[in-house]
Length: 111
Image 1 (cartoon, rainbow, N blue to C red):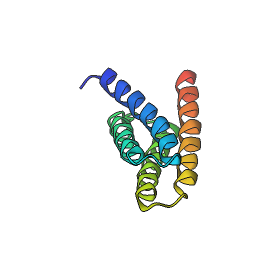
Image 2 (cartoon, rainbow, N blue to C red):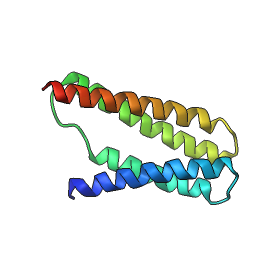
Image 3 (tube, rainbow, N blue to C red):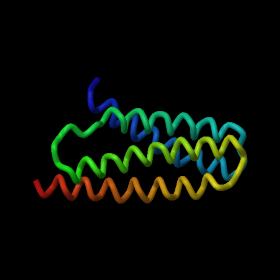
Image 4 (cartoon, helix red, strand yellow):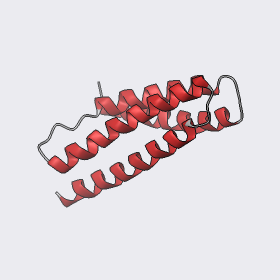
């Protein structure tokens, strides 16, 4: 498929995660389902944007993005379980994603 489709899917997933996390905090019933859908969009788009090069640092940062995907799955599980610990996992996923994204772009600019 076209890379633009996955870019749009990534953006839609990120926006859905952001909006639905607020809805889950406000105890809206369908908020956790929207969060799960946004996480699914996000994970699918991240898995399809796989790095194929030889640079060790870029491979490592892309593995961090896969860990972020696992944290989002854990966040969904904790939301459906009904605990409030999901906020910590979501915060960890956001920090890891932010760091990895900025480092990947900085490394790619060096080349």
